[in-house]
Amino acid sequence: IIMFSDVAALSEDSRVSVYADIYRMALAVPLISVLGVILAEALKRWNPSLPHNRDYCQSTQVRPNWYILGGSFCFVIFTLIMGLTQVPFNQEIIFTGSMAIVVFLMIRLTRELKPSARRLLVSTAVVIFVFRALPGPGAGATWFQIDELNFDQHFISILSLIGSSLGLLGMLIFRRFMAEKSIFYIVGFLSICGAVLSLPLIGMFYGLHHWTAGLTGGIVDARFIAIVDTALESPLGQVAMIPMLAWIASSAPVHLKATFFAVMASFTNLALSASSLGTKYLNKIFNVSRQVVDPLNDQVLVAADYSSLGTLLITVTALGVLLPLGSIIMVRRYSQFWPLREPRLIRLRIPG
Image (cartoon, rainbow, N blue to C red; front, side):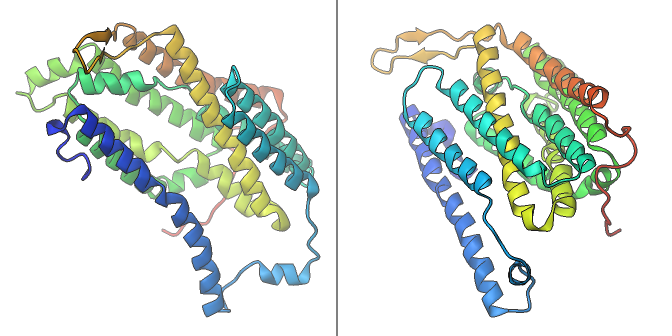
């Protein structure tokens, strides 16, 4: 918000420079993560009474799991090689290879679980994977907001802050909901809510904001609709991941909790790669382009074309409902799983 405060008065080159500065600042994020590990170790040294894994290690013989370590090593090497080489279909190869390695690690890891717990974890992971792998509209929606709705980078950064802040708040607001409902119910609920909350952007593509602004004397304009929609949508953002993490924390074998977290996090993060691929393919089908002008002679190199954006947004919204609900039906039908309402996936004691 601060960096983009005077973006309207900046030239295009200056805006690019601001983006570069923000990305440089973002390099501090890994440093903060490392400092967290160092801080935790320092706190344990200053206060030996704090609980940590050393007590468990002293009472249990710890042996390395070479399948997990070897598979993780292969995962890193494979991703680095493919990411640094210009191989055709690079993204698809990385995704396929990474998925094969992570699935292998999951199979090895879930052998430590009882059959019922194994079915529960795998079913949960599949449903959450599909939910997180949903394709998005891509950059075209942002271009439309900037070019047609006059949302500058400063206003978009405000929306981002609202989304992040209310996303954290949503974890507190929905804590009882997450504890008392099954993962099927949660994902189904979030899918339907996501579709409903996508309607304002679709409506604004077809001129909804002009109609509402005319009825309210200009109060309910495009920015007003965007702020309200972001405020409603943001608290739901991280809800789907928490039940699986809570299950791992409460039910995974004591000596494998960290490994479960790492492997399942890798699996669900691959869903974001699948989402990126799906977004890319949808944008090839529904082509959306932004105007590109040659800065030397002001000649238009690429004309703006948002004619397919409405269909793209409707398709993304429909997939956002059909794919998660379809995965729920498939998992419940083809796996020997419990009914939707009981037992719950997780049972947590929640203050208040």
